[in-house]
Image (cartoon, rainbow, N blue to C red; front, side, top):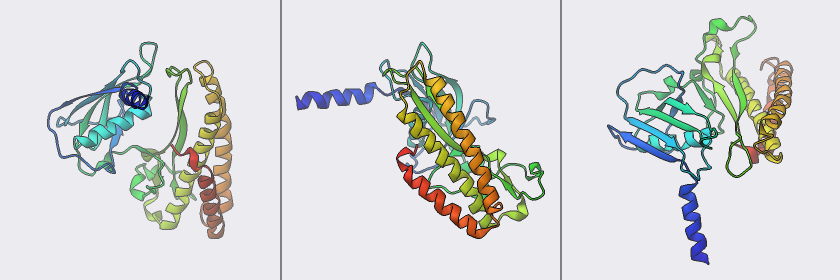
Amino acid sequence: MKLFLYTFSTICLFSCSPRIHTEIMGDRPPLPDSALVVVLDERDRFYRNDEIGTINSFDNVLSTHCTYDEVIAKLKWMARSHGANLIKITMYKEADYKSTCDRITAKIYKVDNVKLYEKKFGWSSDRKLAWEDYKGNPAAIHESNVAATTNCRFGIRANPLFTSGRAKVFVTNEFICHQSSVRPEQKKPSLLEHEQLHFDLCEVYARKLRKELTDAHLTPLNVDTVSKDAFLKMYKLYRERQDLYDIETNHGLDLQAQKQWEHKIGEELEELSAYTN
């Protein structure tokens, strides 16, 4: 009986994942697991003819772990194993009646200073904001009393065709580089700490939304309505809290209030640590 259970688990591990196909033309030494890999969407401009190869994911009949975010994680691992640090998506198909998986085809590259190509990135406790992440035009800041703008967004991606009968929803929280900007003369550590908390506050509400959707009974029939209603409710609370943060800290100029908010948001992140993406 023990042997049977072990064998079944092994089969499930492979058959439940999407298949990854590679066509590698110029392999390089693998990169460490911690290496940054930037993903560019179909609409992002990127013109190079020195790709390492092409990778694509497709359905494996019993595939389940194959939402967009899960597939991207697998493609990043595959890219690193071939020495690549940039993935340029050339084709993306959402799950449909033909397949329960999101399907992606992409070219992989090794570029110098990969952060230059980064357009967005997810929140992580291991990565704090840096001024080099602010790639927007500071001329777009019209208010004379505003030194920087931080554009972070949380949203939902749902796969209503998940094979287990229970729909799957991913809540994302991303920093948008080219919609975030800072006046060159205002690049101060204290201001960056204030902007970091805007991003952290976005993560608090992303986790609150994950918690609410985890507790909900999501099915292919109700996932769109339930997740949309939960998102709109949480987004309203999030916007109100962001405004309150700026008002109470006077945009970071009130250092005592800033410290109080840092402590408060840190506690909330810890309380919701079970709902990290």
